[in-house]
Length: 110
Length: 113
Image (cartoon, rainbow over all chains, first blue to last red; front, side):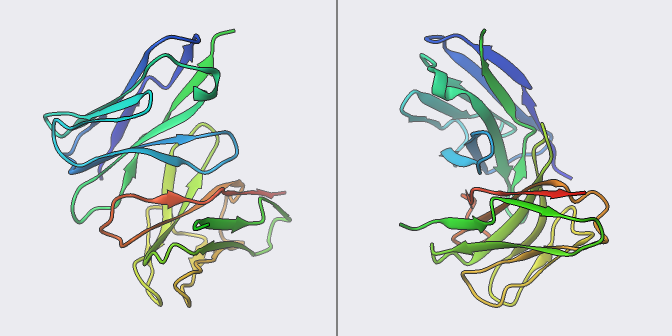
């Protein structure tokens, strides 16, 4: 089946920092989605990408659909404490169900 | 306000009992999904439904059952045959099964002892 590798598994942020995470796939996808999940809540859709090379922003979040169609990146600029949570990538190709990555847990540096 | 509701937020059951988790949406979406999330893990698909009176097994359907008698509702029953039922269960919907953007409910945390 399709597999998504998301990295890093966890990261610490300091307020004001820019952070990045990525997802890579063994298969080609036509769509990449990025979600954020707060503790004990359902994931919320942040950004949807539909074309290879596409770069899309949502406030301080920017995501890119990799040119090979096998990867995607999410950047958070000027991080703030409420950016803490779990970020999931998800990819889909025609005829297949949405596949989720394992998540990147974003934590605040003590 | 359109959205997906799941109830209850927390559910406790004794081993050997079946339990049904509720999922309702007023988004007029055709497709609905159930996922299971274990601590520190991603989402795994249990069942999905493309339309009323239709549903398909996902990757981990064993020990679960669903029904889709109404467009708005997609209840999930966790049966006593499910070996490790304690988990966080998430319901989602999309306009159609070909619409890639899925929207999630707030989840139900099931604890079986």
